[in-house]
Image (cartoon, one colour):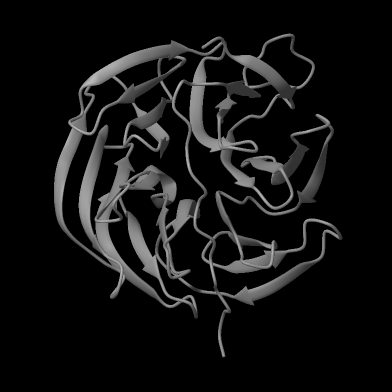
Amino acid sequence: MKPELLVNEHCRCGENPLYDDARNVLYWCDIPAGKIFALDVASGAHKTIYDDKECGAFSLQEDGTLLLLLHGEAALLDPDSGEIKPLKSDIVRETGRFNDCIADPRGRLFSGTMGRDNQKNGALFALSHDLSAAKIYEGTGCSNGMAFTPDLGGLYWVDSTAKRVYLFDYDEESGTLSNQREWLHTPNLTPDGLTIDVAGNLWIAFYTGGFLRFYDANAQLIEQIDIPANHVTSCIFGGANFEHLFVTTAGGQEGSDSTDGALFRLTPEVGGRREFRSRVRGSE
């Protein structure tokens, strides 16, 4: 699995890769630059579709628009026109911006936040269709990646501050999480974003170390894949049959020859699956 360089936007913090199978487009962002990019996977052409506030989390809506979770607020982005429609403000308070999110099978969301001023007041939230928020966990400085188990009975969640991956029981009917337990602890490494393949293996990006690792469902390490960047931030499956793994990185500087902050692609032996789409409507 040799990493293939796709795009080098020299992202200071490339994040949140998200694949739209209807368009064959890969979206990702540079959080501190306040930019979201779109890559046409077939042609290799890419463009900036958003250049505004910091956006650390976004999902695909059923109609193909992007739901942006910003600093306590939400908006919809039309990826074709660039039009932004505010949805709701003051979703969460007394915490930093949203960081990573995932839609569930019913179109609800789970999303975490950053601790304000590097304090441990970040949290993990469940967001309903009207964007009302219920706090699930508090006390982190950096909530991060999430992935559902193949049977939809569980949700993995990364607490980068604690250097741990937790596993919750998930109930689709109610949309609730319970029975939080430690699934993986990497005391000398910082886990970041993650995704899961169809065999139930978890692919985890490590912000420290410059690599991805993938583990089986019992948290046993299968393999480590080096990426030519100092900070690996997240990954997602995409492509016609979800056969490719797209990988984002951080640490880029404009004008540098480095591949820090670039977007890469791998082709593992086992592919992934389509992510669920959000069905958020904002306040009535």
